[in-house]
Length: 396
Image 1 (cartoon, rainbow, N blue to C red):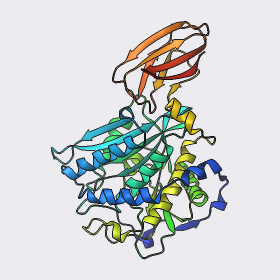
Image 2: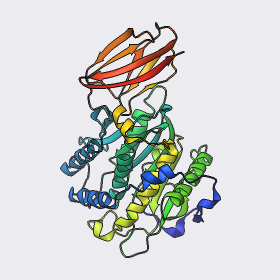
Image 3: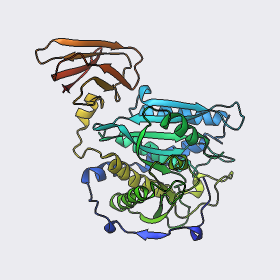
Image 4: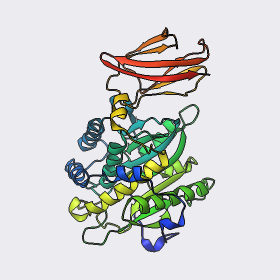
């Protein structure tokens, strides 16, 4: 993570949530209030114990494995995880980004990206950027069973400290390698949000795009940053300062003309990039408050459901079929279904099976052609052993 001086801000403005028209949503607050201080502190402690997370090190691979196990423990499945591997600067050491995808209910092909880097340089990087890592984990934990209209990608980048290599590779190979190009609603970057032990850490800096190359998404970034500022006021006790985005993993997205926002500690640590970037010099309560704000903001950007039924959500494993209504093909989002080998059947209103297909080691999203079927209402059934999920599909 970069160094920032408060006196070099292009914009250093305190905002109040009363400036904007967003309203308080009780369901969002209910989820944000489930944020766990114990989880935050324990995850920071575990992250620190993993050591110096530089490219080519066992510690970096161990941290990747630790992250994967965390997501699995929260209910995400292997099919929801993607490893994006790359090398850089002439090194043969492979680095990996970890992407965990949660498919949206209405806009499954448009993504809210919540990201931060998990590598470190010289020291363990407990603030820079273990603080961002544990915040992303807490958001992912609490939103696992919360339906959202937009899809969410939780991305843990490597290679940030050596020059944003992980995020650059992801943008060039995956965002732009998707046909059509991946549709991104907003990139929400978290880097160095641990605060300073012994100081009053009651303010989080919110960052917007003020870059001139390109500048075409600056207005949209300003709007989303204002929404972020409002969410901080609605769902946490923190105050906010406005600043500009630079030198972190949102910048390759910015250069790609995506809408970016970010958060950064206002009291800036003096321990970054040293062997003393440790939990003892941080304020874990501050991380907890930042996490609460970030949970509310992520729910806002992804448009989370306001009526939450945990039993129904768990029973359906967040499986969805899209688009729905559909015409020529249907996509099956496996959600958090615990089995990758499953049968899909399509049943018409008369109870006749009109289509049946089996998947082995299925991807998170599979596509089936339905071009030969007549218009009407059908039931789509996912089954594996005793597990079964049934949902309506309209062919228009």
